[in-house]
Image (cartoon, rainbow, N blue to C red):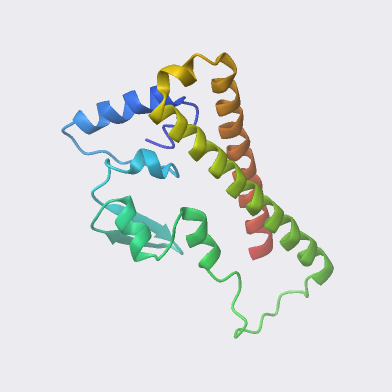
Length: 165
C-alpha cells in the first residue's frame, strides 16, 4: 500500500488501521504517517542511495536507531554534497543556491507548524471525539491542514532535489 492514509480522515484512518492489524498476511506499507505505522510494523526497510537496510522492529525502533524524531530529520542529516570530491561540473550560482536554501528553511518551518497543528487535532479527536466531531468545520480544517502538508512536502522534495543536483 502506498501512502494509504493521504486522503483519509481520522476515523477512516483508524478503521483502516484496525482492519490491517487483523489481517493475518504480509503487508508492505509505504507511508510517512508515523502514527499510522505505529503498531502495524514489525520490520522497517530503508531504501536510500541504491541500498536497502532492514530494521527489525517497529517504526519507533527505526527512528531510535537513526536517532531521529521524524522522517524529515533523517533526510536532513544526509549530506547534500561531498566537499572532499572535486567536481568537473559547472560552478553553480551561489546566490541562487542561497535563495533556495532560505526557501527550504521556510518550507521546513511550515512543515513543522503543520505537523504540530495536525498532532494537536489528532490528540483532540482521540481525547474528545464526540465533542470535536460536532463541530462541522473541524474536519474541513483538519483535511485542509493535511492537504497543505502534502503540498508543502512536495515542495520540500522539489527544493531538496534541486539543491542536490
